[in-house]
Length: 199
Length: 199
DNA sequence: ATATAGTGACCGACGGGTCGGTCAGAACTT
DNA sequence: AAGTTCTGACCGACCCGTCGGTCACTATAT
Image (cartoon, each protein chain N blue to C red):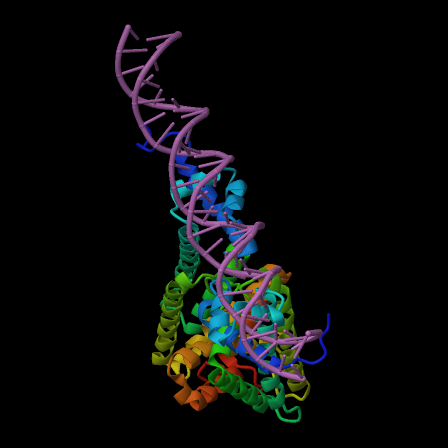
């Protein structure tokens, strides 16, 4: 016996559905995506989706959770506490950039419109954003404590840093900026650390 | 058919509808807003809406256009070419802040998720954003030419400045940051101009 | 090995609720 | 009374989720 699971294919189906959902939701958005289309894209029957997910909303939510999990995991792995803030920010930005380029469809869903297109998920998305903000405030606070970072309002700095990273997903994913990702990172970090004013 | 001039307060009705639409769309989002609710909120019959707008989508689009018009007008009025970049940015940021506080519902629509919740309007919204970016690039280029601004990649700087302003709508509108708007502006401009690194 | 019964993953036609848009007539203006 | 504006009951397209049925595969019997 194999792991006591059912017959046929039960294992891979869920993944197929999620994959198809990513494609469909990212190109048409939540409300314009049809369950039937997802089924067709996954090469299965519509009813089968409901063997794995209870509703369209729950499928969307599961997909988002797994996507954001992947994104946050990418960020966490890059976050090395002992390094100076400038290095940490650079790593984070590069991880962010890499994620955008490696998961273009997911990126569209996460950043296009920045939030979920359904009211039910707003609260959940806000919590995720709040958590991300808190992490950034932590990083900056450490920097202030170590004398690396100016003593401006922590929350303002964190908001700007977090939010401004999101500015690049579109050029990266939709235009040809992937060639110059390194240059982009240089300029971005330079600008955040030193500002735009000529000394 | 084209009727000469409207009797009654044809003008006023349209305004009522737009006003109600702002309320409804901003609190429920496009897809969860019902035409009947808009009619009820405006104190008119559902059919009347279709005397002034051809469809739900067209009503939404008209509302968005007028909202963004108001936003851009606010920004343009504050943009005084002869001043140094730092001043111009400060004026722009303050205008942005003021708009957010004076039009909280509109702000939610414009900035919550940053884009339109319907595929049909994506292209149009992208064009608006591109235009805004171009303006900012113009401002910064002038600054570079006059030797006020560092010679980093103009587009990167413009993206960050534009995008980061949007970081504050939530704290301003949804939390209690309106009291400290002035402090916020100080910190923000300081950070953009000089960066976060301790000299 | 062959037959028979059992299992549950899989399917898609269909039911039913929802809501954008319509239209015949009411209400109002001139 | 003629014209214009307003109205809400009504229509029907749309699409989510269901459910009875199918089928590939397994388990047991002979």
